[in-house]
Length: 98
Image (cartoon, rainbow, N blue to C red; front, side, top):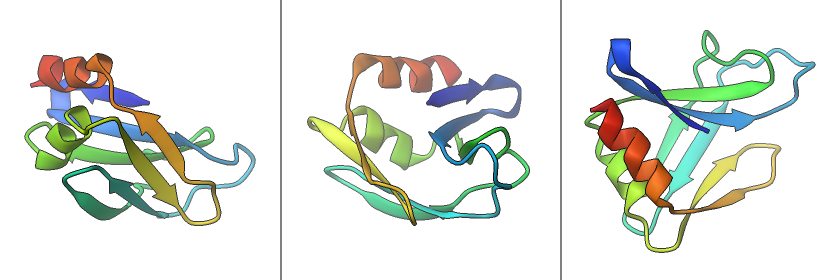
């Protein structure tokens, strides 16, 4: 999920995880056709079975996700890599949040 946190001028990237286990800071990596970035999930935001990374609305990674040719990947330790399609909805979330 990609969610706009407009009051804080941030976009949150959510990835489902084990709902029965506390979510410590977990390494994640976003890979697009033009950029790759390792990150850590935020334990304060990662509740209820989600790993969450919060990015400022002007982060170039958001543009790379939105304009990736075809798809982008979300890699997480101990989980299958997610290959997600690039879509107009992602661009819309980012643009509307800005």
